[in-house]
Image 1 (tube, rainbow, N blue to C red):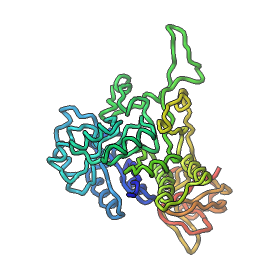
Image 2 (tube, rainbow, N blue to C red):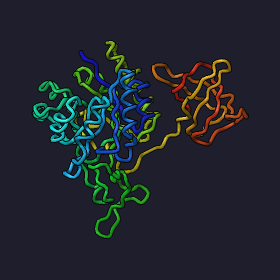
Image 3 (cartoon, rainbow, N blue to C red):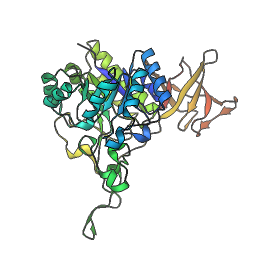
Image 4 (cartoon, one colour):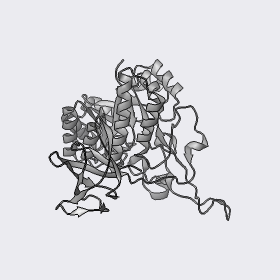
Length: 399
């Protein structure tokens, strides 16, 4: 059986490299043009080229989102852009418009065309039609149950991609006009204001129905499919996708590492025990601010999978990013993120290694002044850690 690809998001070049270091088989990014996550698309053309080179050096693949809902005015320059992506070795583009498949196959034929979830492909007939038009993969709509995914997989040989983690849209496959109406920012052309996550007062005529202390929101719980990976792996799904191009490097590292470990176990023919699953779900919780659910995978969307009031709980576990290890003194130079202090229990994690905990006894400024606590983000300082660490490891607070 061919291995499932683990596909991770990246907002910028540093995060793309983090995703690959922590175990992603492929990374999807957005350029400055034609991407649905306009605010997340920090990749200049030269950054895309560097990301491609880094990915290929590490036997990974790089995909570029070209997934806005195209109007005629958006087609200006698209041929040249696709030819550029092909010339630097981009492996695939993720697109919403079927018409773009024809353009890509004519002007940049080496690019694979992956059909975005925005197109809402929910059945094998759609997959077969897309295949006949030249699509190389389809990202199934997130409204499918596992049973329905299995049926599609049986009835088409077009490679399938399925979301396994991250934010869910309140509307159908992301095709929402709330942002357009409320903010004049087109959600389907890169400007979503996430209006579904705002707080709303509800009225019946002049009478307010909502509790002022618990205002209404219509967002969904985030998707988390750790318990479903065994089934998706069994079905031979080509790619398992993590959402989150707006997320931090800590989120990417934590989530990719957890799913990578599960997939490695499944690839090796090992069972995922209840104890394993509990550990992995706890790891995933360390990266999230919002409650989880399994989306539509179990065949329903009960009200307990929705967030009718804001339930985000911002976490401040991420302490810092390891920049350097001094093996002679056991000191680690980190770039800080959130507050911590001497006496805290900290945990180091990194690519392909187990978590290791220690109690922080000593830390120093860059100029070697002893410190008791740190409250300044993006500050460089030294920690005394009683075991070996490596550049690109991360340090978090244990609560």
